[in-house]
Length: 574
Ligand SMILES: Cc1cc2nc3c(=O)[nH]c(=O)nc-3n(C[C@H](O)[C@H](O)[C@H](O)COP(=O)(O)OP(=O)(O)OC[C@H]3O[C@@H](n4cnc5c(N)ncnc54)[C@H](O)[C@@H]3O)c2cc1C
Image (cartoon, rainbow, N blue to C red; front, side, top):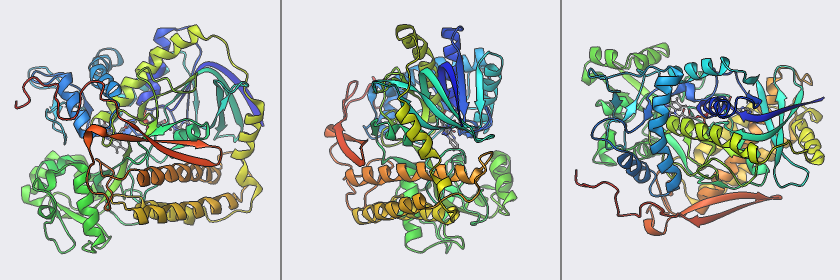
């Protein structure tokens, strides 16, 4: 049942974080055995591939890393770890040069040869570098080719299920994985492991991330007793396509540029409503527009499928069709006329700002474990700027790739695993086979609705407490529900079960952290505590599992570079 493998570096996930880490680790020390293990296929899974808008980087005249930093800190409502945020904006410049000059990406250019930067909400400079609206495909395809060209081992369709500590419990020994194709278990012993499984808030009724993401990384980190921060911070994108319950297109993003170009939001009776919420109307930030739409939905002023409309036709259907070709075609596939008619939209869970606590060099509290990308916490605070997501995964993936070989140099040798933990984790992963099959689909639907209704865009104490009660009941029912088919090879019902287990575990942490934060910051809005609180004494939440108890505490944000009210820009007025 259990095969054992050894590698020097094990990378979990093949998104921007995982692939950059693999390339940098190989460059740092080509003698090291590097393995990329991923739930999907390298180059075809995760969210980096789905990046439409682009990559934030301060390159062009008039911009600066200081300006990018200030936008990131102010966008994150003063909650980001400033050392991480500074590293993000500073190293993004290097990474974009590497992407173009070493990895082989082509990004769109201005007539003078400089890289073209798009306007993205919440930023004071047009710095979002892109390849049309298919930036992620360009980045991930080129990264994939570079990984293929090197002796980097790939374990595709392998799911990590547990971080297994060394015998003395003081470091990580390796990772227990399921080979999805054969159903066999593999224990991969590694000197250093990167967690790059990409978060992904897919526990909400409407969501955008890829289907292979189910918060497995954070669920594993939690079980290993590691601290997670900012877990209440779920970013909702205001305009997810609402195409009815029977298509997976529902929830997918209709890009922000539509509102930027002058798109209008109308309620079910076709009344434009954003003036009731913000003077910037549809161009208000993502969190404000999402809350406005959600409030309209709660008030019952909805479209046939329960959302609101976006209207573009007044800008000229031909112009819209030309400017937003991909979006117009996607809507047409679902029977909607975006260029000339009305399209139903709904806020959709898009990105997870919370994650594993880490240092600037991507190390964590557990020696041997590193984290990068959407699994890492602290870079974005209460809000992620559009374009800072892929910058985050590539910047910190590369840093992890540089750091792990160095650490292995100082800490050579594999560490024998705690066999008791390994045996317990093997049993845990097979839990559903010992039980009678049940209706996992109904359980998933209940989870999606509970998170959407009680732990979603607008929260309050009563709703969060109700949500926690529901989550306990869903978890209890999952643990009593089995998988009818005992076959292990490609048993997707088993993997659905495992996905649900991770999602429920992390959902409870989100609800707990949201209950703990009694103010409203960025993506987190409490109707019973609508004020943002004192910025100068900002706290961030920390969640940690101790035995059966989930502890949620908070800690003060350290303003190591800049304090609220200050700016790094020489001429703030400018
Ligand atoms: C539709 C969409 C559009 C976006 N547009 C932008 C944009 O324009 N600009 C921007 O900056 N950001 C954007 N983002 C966010 C951005 O895509 C992510 O922040 C970033 O790509 C995450 O990179 P990552 O490497 O951490 O994770 P991912 O790229 O998501 O990769 C995660 C990897 O982990 C694997 N994995 C998951 N669970 C397991 C497991 N248990 N075992 C093994 N492997 C596992 C997955 O299969 C995958 O390979 C967008 C996201 C979406 C969904």
